[in-house]
Amino acid sequence: MNRPFAAIEEAIEDIRAGRMVVVVDDEDRENEGDLTLAAEATTPEAIAFMATHGRGLICVAMESETLDRLDIPLMVGKNTSPFETAFCVSVEAREGTTTGISAQDRARTVQTLVNPNAKPSDFVKPGHMFPLRARKGGVLTRTGQTEASVDLARLAGLHPSGVICEIMKDDGTMARVPDLVPFCQRHGLKMVTVADLVAYRLRRDPLLNPLPVTQVNTNWGPVTLHRFESALDGAVHLAFVFGDLEGPEPPLVRVHVERLPDDLLGFATDTAAPFHAAMDALAREGRGVLVYLRRDAIAQVQQSPSDREVGLGAQLLGHLGIRRMRLLSRQEKKYIGLHGFGLEITATVPLDAL
Image: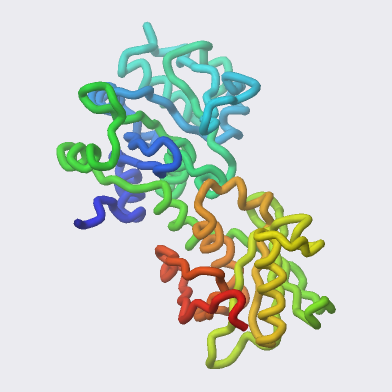
């Protein structure tokens, strides 16, 4: 069966042209599809389509800076919803609306929200449009449809905000991918996943800024220490380089996620053993690199460990000039879309084999 999802480039083009797309999040989240439209392209007809065919709550996702400028606060001080969707106080455009609920009124409110000259006094609270506060960094910090809609609009060169609406079936239950495929075919819409958008951004957005390189002596001998500052949150990730990485043979590579204090103290636990075993293996090999990702930074990216490693780790390896590698791992892993980062795993070396 062919994959039912379009390329992110196609979705960006549709968003740029003022068309809707359907964005699907991951199975470990809501696993739902949202009708998604650039906010500045919102029309009464688009709102009516969402209300008629989407049937979910129509919201407008926006950057925090815009919401702060318009004095639109979060709905609650402590968010206890499972996925921490950042609902703000509902609003209405003060001018040009009547009851506020009609398609015309809601479109008017959205257009007022994205007006760069809008000011707090242009809105009344509460209203019938629900702003959502997207996290800084977009889908690279939170893999929700809120951030996806803002990212798609920004990538399309439009105002970084999107109107979204969950899609329900005729019986009122949520539409999943098997339901969304015929839905998209019926309405001529493209469907994309948040995971694909994450991969797209990770391949294109510079996440790491190189810091000065130092030579250090360790328990495993001398290593070259490369440091990289995250453009997302300022966290510093490390690369311990053994020997010369250049040469015809792919170097040995290990990607390790921080586990303190075990990594430092060397406790004999399942979580600590990989770091010390990998450093031992690299020291014996005399050539290779251990990528050390800070946990505080990557824990916010709600993807599987392999996605986190492929994202930050791939960009870090690219800075080191690595394109082909032998992966040091306890088990063989399949990295989907690894070629998109310009990386190739030529072999998987068992962690305790060297």
